[in-house]
Length: 498
Ligand code: GDP
Image (cartoon, rainbow, N blue to C red):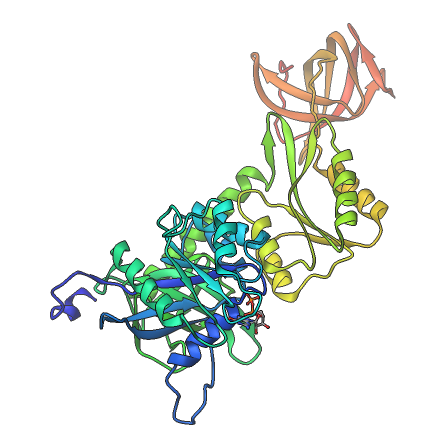
């Protein structure tokens, strides 16, 4: 690519911000996202908006006259954002924390705040619903301060905008503020490198096949290239912009949809672009190998000081059944296997739960009187996460006990019962050898495992399949006695071996 871009002298160019809207349910995230979109979106030829992907771009001119494009991630709630953040990749450059002026800070406001702070994403507080009668901006600011969100003019420097997502009042101020915050962040990108970024949505469509929406964080992608994410790969043949229009080329901060993946990319995973198929294939193969190695190393199990940790994620229909399920799980502790509830919640098992269950700790997902939605099923299948749902607690307990039993490490203790010298080999067919020997000490028994040594060095193992003493079958031969035996072993035993 480099040589085709000689006209572009500047390497690092200003990059427009990618913005995530977060906050408590019903505080107005979707309303705000659709207000911004509708107020800015160009209508297409048919006079309507045809197709949407889960991110969009708008152009905004600030009061100071600066025109800048902004990319909004249009995902329902902040679940996708926190899932993405969990993977260590921060897709958003700026977050907007929406807080209703009627309700103030709520549990998901705090959750969103944790996500924002953990990822060190700069953020703006949007106090919404100021058109409503019950709106109280001061009280809302107060509730924010009580939760250690110190706003501008309230003893801190976190920018705040009061607005109504319904009437649009204050929305231009929010967009101005986003541009200002982004400016301070000094966001830059390089158009001359191959694109990379983050997958924010993926779908399996019966007609189109597998599609994924990606946000480019740096570089350029063009038709004819190849895109990979994890072990998934797609040729860049059908690429659409956020309006669903086919495009040939895209660059940083653009949301794009790529159609034609060979498998479902994982939401929140990083993507890379290659200018030839071979390199892309290599990247995917390397990733597959890495996954295979990881699996064979830990067998999917995590041990801590000899105890097998069994991570479990629980979803239940009510608070009390959740508590009951967790209590039951805690009771199933054994000396060697420790079930551990890593996350719990109420409601349907969603993709976000599966994301939490994925990762280094591969958790079992248990649902109690809840449903599993189909994106969750798909993702679980892809990530080999086991989902089990129950309606009766003891059924769950029984099942878990069985799981624990199969996971309990089989303790192999070696105990020597006796030692015998091989005197003669009578015959050998495949792995069976008939031989004669004398027990030098202890005893040998039918069915016992044997270790074969030659000049005191271990050369292999076997098993005593038949045992005779004075030509009649026996179970045991004691010290000093001679015997005949059939030993199953891959080692060719010789006279003089022990
Ligand atoms: P979300 O769950 O955060 O996405 O919240 P929604 O955008 O779905 O909004 C929840 C409800 O509040 C809807 O009925 C909206 O119409 C309403 N709503 C959102 N913003 C405003 C606002 O600024 N003013 C008024 N009056 N209603 C709003």
